[in-house]
Picture (tube, rainbow, N blue to C red):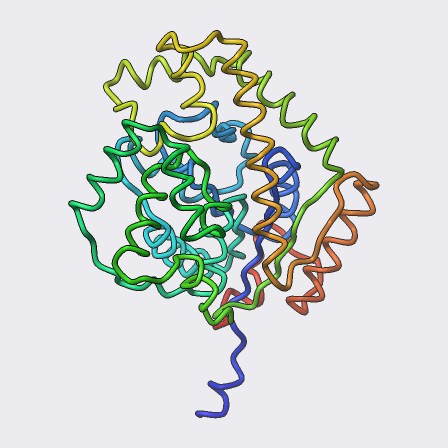
Length: 335
């Protein structure tokens, strides 16, 4: 009996990651339909209700009947951490598998996704509210970029990962160093990097110039779809301008325009620049991850799709013969 138990396979987990605007959304729908999967959003911003345009959230009507999880689960003023995501994601994976479906994480937030794939253990470093208040006051007086520069001095790898406007997470990284004398990046690198799942990691990439052009086109579409009105509406609802969610790309830049700090043209120029920089950081993060099968989205899409199906079939040792009425791997009994 013990021997039979030890022969049970790990739970399969499909993951599709890549920088913003690379083409994850449409491909994820195609793969989810083909492999009888349910999608778990691996995006740290799509969790927030009412933040749809700036996060490129796929409307319900365009999800083609594919069930999506961890979207619209928090109000914008609520705090939400990577540890919260990890716990929620583990629960969703187990529930999806219990229904005989394939759990499928899709997104671009590297730390969130990697924390689930390899069961990161987050150290309890404690807290120092006085220190946090001091750093927040420094940011208020000198600007977020000055605070980011402080982090770069003590933990350059965390500074490279975090956007200069992500004040809350920058303060947390500084606080960890303040309390423990250890860099947050060092704690992350110490993780065992072994997965409790049977992972199939697919990474999307493309020519940098083409990607940047797609980013700019996406932002233009967001503006046409009403990004400025979305930000106005959030502020009118009473969402604090300093809420973590409001520091996300697209929201902080438009708030600058609405406060009269710059023209709309300048805000859009800044947003496009910051989004290009974010895509570069995403790629840098993913390049450090192991076991990713990289797909160049600039090549023939049909050939890419065939290759992707072959990678998934080989990794999970199954054939692509699923329909919406079939369970993944004999009823989801894999453990």
